Length: 433
Image (cartoon, rainbow, N blue to C red; front, side, top):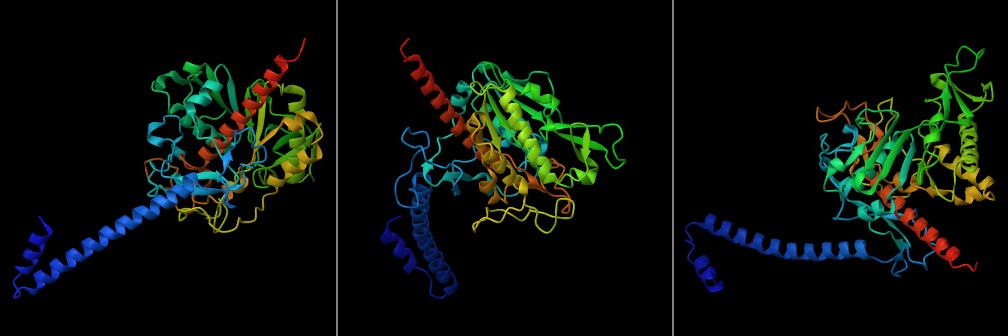
């Protein structure tokens, strides 16, 4: 229909039918406004997206890549969350390596905004996660996660990220035939095409927990030997990449209140605080790395404490986070958990030791403080429906979600470490005989 025909049609409206004329005029007006609004919206969104995806640092200078040789001073843990339509990196329904409790969308969570945020360092760009490249770098090697259930959260995230490029999912399997769901202990998944394993070992304290010695006070039900590593650590020490974490269980409620006290040698330290015990356990960890781990072979990282976001009470007192759908936009809240600071204090005191200098941090604490929207909240019980409102999970994270960003940082640090080792190897081979 031409413009002329359109206006003739308008003229032929019967003036005795004013409601029809008014309706037609209204529809045309809405259509024109809608067209202009749509064009303007597309322009604005395109501009925002271009800025977020290809933007500059706050000073206006273009960011360099984290892996660039000239880029030595970028703190990848100092940054912001930016919206990215290309996320998430996988869909939970396409990954069979997830516990039901992390499948928030499948468990009924109505929003998906939490899957669309990408971590952007202020002064450099992270390499885009390339599952094929990481698997190639891991060929014939072992990547091990050891720690608590938040470490398991991160491990399952990485399994999904890596498996996304494998067409034949049957070539990825648990070497002992164990199911991933509800299994405690350890799990070893092999990527057969690359002869590599991605493993998880449950050790919430990293040090040994067992029965108290004979003659201990009656209230002592369990003992944490802060001067002795968990027995299962013998399975970690020969890993090629070792990601450790501890923190969520290092609190009064999970220890002393439950009758779990701290032990050094054969003595129960009834007056030892949780903070002091955690400090001693971290010293034990560093001593173990020095004596048991070949740091020229094994790349060791410690993932820092991932914050919880219970509002209106603790986990066992009606606290919740189910109304959170967006990251925090204001200043970072104050972190009250002393476990975050303790590990830095221990490392600072021993920073002159060579094995400590080779130790790397996956410092996810501050970046995760903003992500109150990323937790499982009510959506961890499976497809049967949401949990009761007074039994929320604001500790663990939905997948896909925040732990994917931790793994993107792990990927970047791993590539940087590989580059450094490759450079050192090349230099060594060029030395005169």
